[in-house]
Length: 211
Image 1 (cartoon, one colour):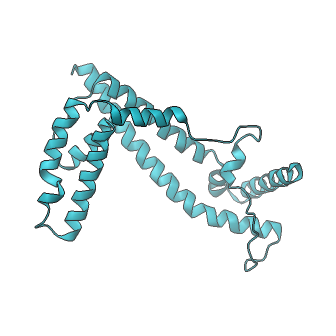
Image 2 (image 1 turned 30 degrees about the horizontal axis):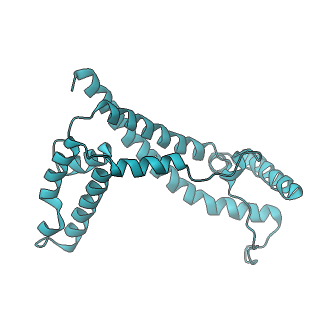
Image 3 (image 1 turned 60 degrees about the vertical axis):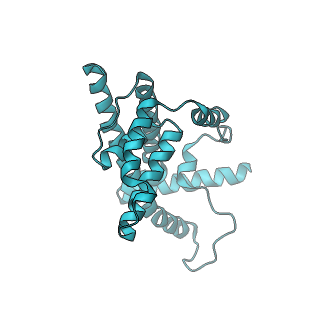
């Protein structure tokens, strides 16, 4: 692999790790913010804290970021076909080589003398590597290989393009959450929280009026 290609891929790997960590942290903060937002919403609507929850709960704050005219989301048939085709196509030779190295360390048959914790951990690595091989997921193999101090295989140009696409998907997920009403409310001061909540309730009322 030429130096330019190798440098580009290393940057993509670092970007991928950063985005994965960002998404994980963003989801944790969202889970923490959600009950606080719901409690404040109930208070603004005049619901007592111990009152029985209505059968129809209001939409999540993230949902109000989407235009009402947008079509309902549905599974992307093209994405499903890509997954099926990835499983059908011939396995990448580089991935097969590194998978064999991984299996030599973490195949379930080689874990009998380890503690239960180590067996579970290494079995999870083996399953992750096997799934990556089945779908020609280069980065999945790289993650496991690095965990076991195994030299990862050089990526092809196609694998680099797939990594760029994956990074874009992760970045879009992070941005979607961080642009949500819930996220903005959680990090706002008292005055801004009141404004955001009032606008949220206003849009709820508009939705119910138009239903």
